[in-house]
View 1 (spheres, rainbow, N blue to C red):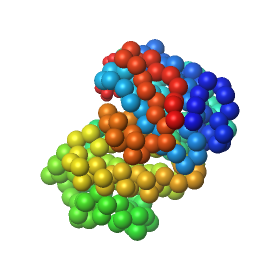
View 2: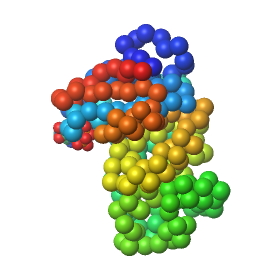
View 3: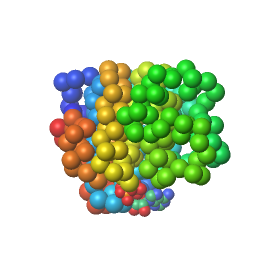
View 4: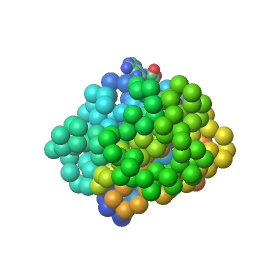
Amino acid sequence: MEGDGKESAQAALLRVRDLRSRIAGPFSFDLPDGECLAVLGPSGCGKTSLLRMLADLDENSGTVMLEGRERESWEAPAWRRQVAYHAAEAAWWQVRVDSHFSAGSLEFMREEVTDWMAALRLPKDLLSAEVGRLSTGERQRLALVRTLVRTLARAPAILLLDEPTASLDQQSVAGVEQVLRYWLRPGRGMVIVTHSEDQAGRMAGATLRLGGNAAGRHASG
Ligand SMILES: Nc1ncnc2c1ncn2[C@@H]1O[C@H](COP(=O)(O)OP(=O)(O)OP(=O)(O)O)[C@@H](O)[C@H]1O
């Protein structure tokens, strides 16, 4: 995996060149099909900004291509369905957990959701629980289930994960990583922001290290 205009040996699922906003970048890298890129760097260096630009949630310039197709040729809602941003702190706006899933999706994806809940060490009845009674860690893991359900029927699909295990215990971290590894397969790619070198080593084929001034550059394998 590399940036800087050179062709990567493996076809890039996501290609990023000179992506920047007024606060972060420029960023250039290739994400090969079926791979995970870890983004590391000190607080405030622009990691969240990078993910939000990739998802086209914040104003940005530069080139982003998915499967060789420029982002500008996608309708914005279609792009955000294929390139899903998973925030460090997910928003919950309904009383019950299951009200946050689109109609029928939990039933349709029952098998996968059951597997994920088990791997994430979440009792199945939490899906019908009230959000207000959940612990922080339960909310965090349920938010991941929500994001995964959103992406499951998409191809290609990119998952942009902002510190998905930030406040979790070791067993829950292992569960999240297991679920993410299961999710990653041909036609999919993942960018994970983490403060853990160990997690980057376990999850990612390449690492993008950002400097301290929101100016990061190229991925190194
Ligand atoms: N809307 C905004 N307007 C101005 N500055 C912003 C805005 N959003 C973020 N910033 C600044 O841009 C820089 C990068 O923020 P960003 O959230 O991307 O950092 P980060 O690397 O994800 O940090 P952390 O590890 O603490 O989550 C920070 O200095 C932040 O204060």
